[in-house]
Length: 107
Image 1 (cartoon, rainbow, N blue to C red):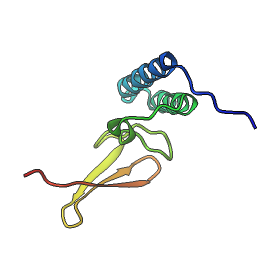
Image 2: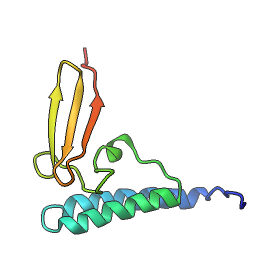
Image 3: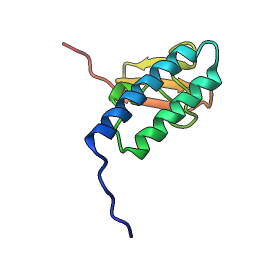
């Protein structure tokens, strides 16, 4: 088996910049070209996997892991709040997958 070689810092930094740029492009293209937006998210995920770069919490919650659709409230996703279970429920309108994220109220 081949040993895994850690990528140089400059490569991971460039990968993070490209991922961020692709997410910005995906947001811009969502209205006019939704398929192009999906492709940008897919490319960002591939770059993240290749260079072993973690997405930020906001980036992770911004796209559907099943169909690579950018999740924008009332456009491509439905957002509800379950106050009894303290959950934010996000449903992808493209594939129907449901995400549940816990939350706590600020005091």
